[in-house]
Length: 79
View 1 (tube, rainbow, N blue to C red):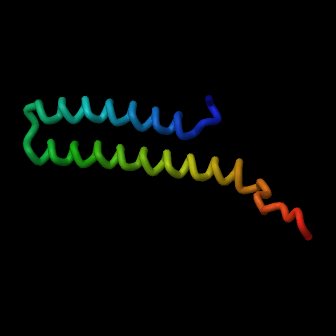
View 2: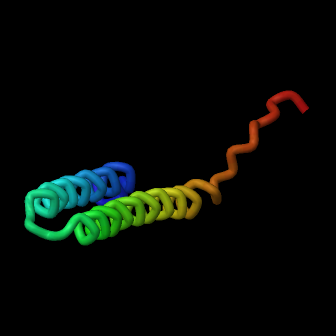
View 3: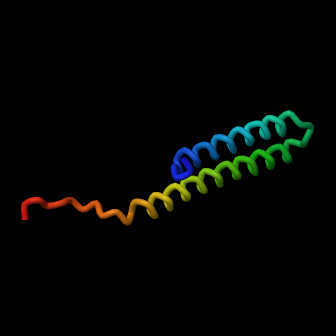
């Protein structure tokens, strides 16, 4: 399971998304000024976007490292 970057990355993204969702609800319910709420919201969403980019980069680099070396050229039976 630790080799499956799709499951691990998807789980990481979902957990991060849930944490950020809870934090966004707390920020919006707080007594902060509108400007501070907006800045906190933008910061949390930037973190979520950064996690998504990290997961995609991690998966693609792992895929390239594991499968790019395979020789997938078709075998010509009739030469």
